[in-house]
Image (tube, rainbow, N blue to C red; front, side, top):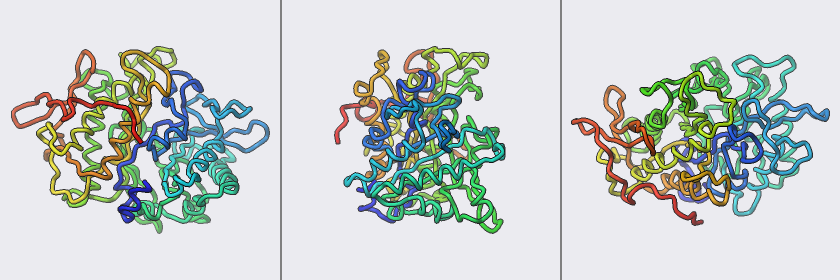
Length: 437
């Protein structure tokens, strides 16, 4: 982002194309395979271009300290940085991110961290004596006290939701920005102006969890109508029944495509449907491809692994991004729609993908299946792109069709005379080549 900040400092954060990771800390070897979403450390993710981190926390009072530990669902994440407790702490996470951002070559970078309170499962369900907000604040303050770089805690407490929605890359330069999915009574009571972008509404699992499309409303000051702060997509398991009576890769990619259109048309200069009212978050993760709703998730079967599903999803996503970026795409329905800007795909969250021909379970051997895809997302910030059409009924002119055999989904386009298989992209399909700096 530092290069982009020099070229276009007034661009708003919500107009950027940002690669992120889903459950950023659930690393190979430090949680169960069914919970493993990443092979890279936090620093390795940031080095690869990731600028959005997704961290889940719970209260940790072990040893008499008011700490916070990192979790994935019900499971503690092991500390791959080697603490004696064996659990990865939120303090370690912040310390590592600050350490990376304080390196001379990274001091102008902006990183977003979404922090989710996993002690509660719904709105206003906090335990008696709830103090997660205080713990996050105090840990952040302690980490910054030992950090020589720019301070972000006060920055996060001084900018309201409205200001986050209009924040430019120049304003955010060198800052670690908080997306808060936990309650902060001090903000509610008015004793603190803000504490990051308020996404506490995401705790309403009945409304937002495993939802193909959702809009998050954040409180506005003075009792005015709420802000639409985030448009998202988080379809990830069998609870949604597609045409095959289970979640397929085609179902998932069609949900991704639908939100991708919203991001591009809503944040691209010169497009008539530009709305500029919210961030757009598109999650590529799939928790499991289930055969039926009666399947159990607590068994160690490889088809349940997030990395297994990412291995199938990444090439499907890569093919579409490549078409959108191509000066002369072979997908007939793509156009620039009169855009004066480059086009934005919003924030896209990735799980790690392994080798499709056989599980390697190794970071160095599999990074070329992942990091170039992050670069594709970043490329939307620097070069023109195109997007597909959507009709008046909300039907997209492209879709992924379910296949019984690998790759299990096929990109098709609608030309008024039915659906047709999309021609291969200009480079004969999405190729994940060796990463270059």
